[in-house]
Length: 345
Image (cartoon, rainbow, N blue to C red; front, side, top):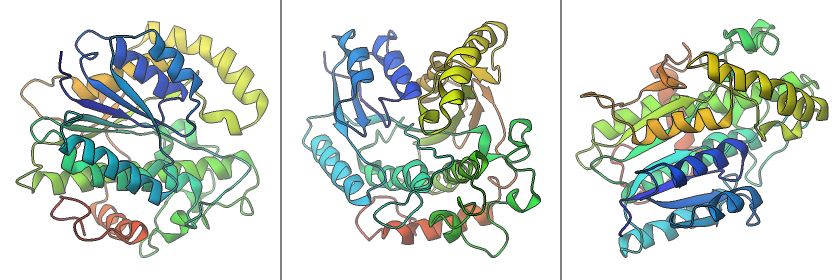
């Protein structure tokens, strides 16, 4: 049987990414899609083991380093060519899941960007714009994985943002270059875990600000007006691999054992517990990508798990959204003809 469409999941070998793949490959109705699952390392033991138990699900596991803009362009060009040639059906869902987080260390990409900014936001932004030509123009969806960390006022973030100077990511007139280039909340400013967490939070804010900025442009395009972009906050995940660069005690004992038990109980007791298992959040992501929302279209919506929610005040600031968009175009050096989005500048 011909697949109904292509679904792309970035960061498929991670804890949540692997759970999303398992959900897509096993759920009735979703297994009819062709999967393109991107991984940083071709070995990808977790996702390969998951897919070995889903023999009826057709898929590719492809390497993609989102921190290298040349890699993103090469990947997108190859996939667009396959869709144009009819080797792959059009993209029904593009799930931007891959994530990178540091704590007491800080690294930069070959292009000079903070690695968290590049992996979580910049590479995803470029990938999305390049793949728009291969999206299903009638019901395509782009799903952005958000994070509670993007909101400094959230209760869980009080320790990392207790100093008022960190509570605004983009002070008026400051631009985005400090966050993009990693001169904001550096290891010199704060050598503890909170410095790296703030850089991660800033990159997730950028991802979330992409949602309304891109939706406005999609809605005004005759070719792309039926494509929706929406976000999902997966909650604090107990069985995540995102913390592997953090303290051993926190990664293995606190999250893999204590908080995992708490998350299992939380999933049972509440629809959107602050602590969630990757399996629960994977279901929320699948619903965002393929679910029905009555007569409404989920254009620019943001969810906390399965419940519609609101972005932070700074994320909703349209002037800052447009500032970030304009400066991102410059960071990736987007040129005429690379995207079919009309209003890309």
